[in-house]
Amino acid sequence: MIAGSNLEKIVNSGNFVVTGELGPPKSSDITQLKHHAEEMKDHVDAYNITDNQTAIVRTSSIACGSTLVQMGLEPIIQITVRDRNRICIQADVLGAHALGIKNILCLSGDHQSFGNEPGSKGVYDIDSMQLLKGLQEMRDENRFMGGDEVEAPISYYLGAVSNPFADPFEYRVDRLEKKINAGASFIQTQCIFDLDRFEKWMELVRERGLHKKAAIMGGVTPIKSLGAARYMKNNVSGITIPDALIDRLKGAEKKKEEGLKICIETIKRLQEIEGVAGVHIMAIAWEEIVPEIVERSGLYPRPQV
Amino acid sequence: MIIAERKPLEEIAAMAAPYKKICVLGCNTCVGVCMAGGEKEAAETASLLRIHRNKENQEGEVDVFSLERQCEFEFIDEVLERLKSYDLIISLACGVGVQTMVEHVPSLRVVPGLNTTSMGYPTEQGVWSERCLGCGDCVLHLTMGVCPITRCAKTLLNGPCGGSAEGLCEVGEDIPCAWQLIHDRLSSFSRLNDLDEIQPPKDWSTSHHGGPRTTVREDVRIDRGE
Image: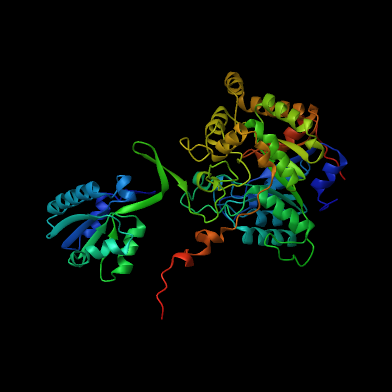
């Protein structure tokens, strides 16, 4: 056991993990976020809290994470390298630990040009690989990135993201391995809409035994409407949606139910794929549907470990 | 070379508005080659400015000439008296040229007529692409001659982010993904394993983040004695 988080315990227990996602608001009123957290609390093992997702200014991930801790729930804090240099990131990680946050997910972050401050200076002092490695060394070797000693032990469960749908495809598994070597214990993937490509990627993952070195969690997003699917296909960086899926939605009478069905089918198929340790449900702007997805996917009740 | 482009005429005209004796000063080196601030562009800018000022009923005159380089004292010195005769010099040099002039001749009032954009080269006629940020610690030997500091929008050092799609950067469809290029080159030299090594955080102190940089070469300095 590294950090003793619920997420880590469930991964270690061998149960299929379920994580949800909460996006902080563009205000300091986090009532809604707390409400969504309550809504899915019996259905997910931990919650990702995004870090200024798509480069839009929002309440900070750590502040929301701390609120969840106070509610007795378990956050996974996302940290991108876009907005903070190594001084600030390490300081924030110390602060997050002091606030009782036990899971950290390391990412590059969407480029600032996508957000509502497109003229801002992107930091990118370090990259996501260096972030993982740096945080691993802070935890395991009591050393800051600059070499100074961390004066009291710190622990957290470290994760990273992987996008099997980005290019160059053949490099994606190399990169995953590199992230695991850099300290990632769990991996959440980009939203899976192209299961064939995901399965091909998983085959390569298994060939190298990477599924035994880190918990691979497949990312899913329920699509609420045809417009949402098209928007994601055309505007969200790193997401691919096959035309067949768009056509299926187009042909469906009840788009919402069809989107839900696609999501549940995906989760069921993920449970069948060797080496997939769990699912990460990103129900952006449709958080209230998460309990139903989890139940209909046969993943309820959640294990108590 | 240094790449620049001319500021919009309206902006130049606004800077010049309060002055009477104005000189548009070209620079024939880098910005001459990239067709932003050489002799020809200086003449063109001066003409446009004259027309604009006539229309606005602004009095005064707009002269024009060029230096070989505005970033070296010896070229400035050759025309020093002439430069001093103007109320305003609109420099069509890069930012270095503007500053060399004001540091060397503090009495001059010099404003920039160009926006200096980058260090790069013409990838085709009329297109100049950035290739170097001058970070002070070159990594091109690690990346098969493709600079991730300049060409990756996130200055990543350990491979492509999740936004790389079909060879393009997530930031724009006309931007090739630097890491796709690096990957392809490593692959063609059978050296993809080079990417397995985790590159440590970059020491940015050699870049602008360490403050303005001065390069000192004792071996070529002139000993001025006491």
